Length: 138
Image (cartoon, rainbow, N blue to C red; front, top):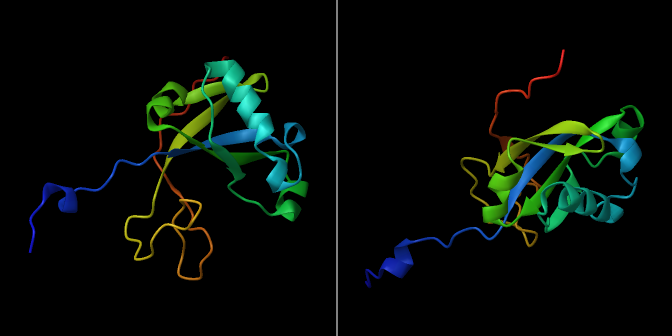
């Protein structure tokens, strides 16, 4: 058995997933496959960071019809994640951003999209790192 250090180490992730909360649905498209351009342009203008992908944390259109805001998960290069945390001004308001962590014990390998999957093959819900809420002006 070869005890090479390469066999014992795991490669660094090439993407970090972040959740942006309370994004107004009025600024986002209804179709999830059309979501990417809106947060890409807004984040690029606010922090000069390019996102790699974007998806709704809750992709159910019926749920969106009952709400005025939703959460969006974006993927960025790991060095860019710290530039976005813990909040960002998007769509004329401060939005809380949290780092999504993969499930603690997942026997399944990541899917082709890089997201962990549940036993049924659907995306596993992300776990969040909570930060103190951003103070609101009085």
